[in-house]
Image (tube, rainbow, N blue to C red; front, side, top):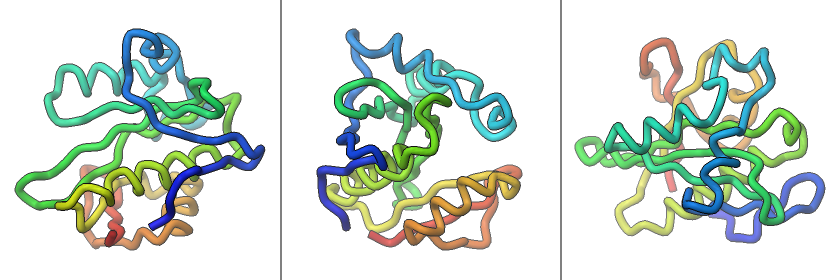
Length: 157
């Protein structure tokens, strides 16, 4: 598995941080391009609420050179044993710079360091070609399963 530091296409160091009193507002305001709202929430605030109220997901701020540029969350399926990635949103102004790729690589490294992590899964809508290209290029493969309308892919770590 790759190790830090992870950089985007501009050479900025991309890291993940806990959502806290200092950054939660900036994370909540992260918004994708309008045409991506079919696939992700209109604001990362929805994912923050899901993490705070749902009891399963853990939100992280995506930072580029220390500034908030996105959101991603993870969960552990205790029954199935897999770790899951969800709720990834890169702010529209930050897209196309490799920030999403660097964020996923950083999260994969973080999850792979957990002693019980053997597999990471995620799901995406089949029409979300950008997500499909990203996850395929990182080595995720289809499981043949679906979560609602989304395809489930997995990566052994």
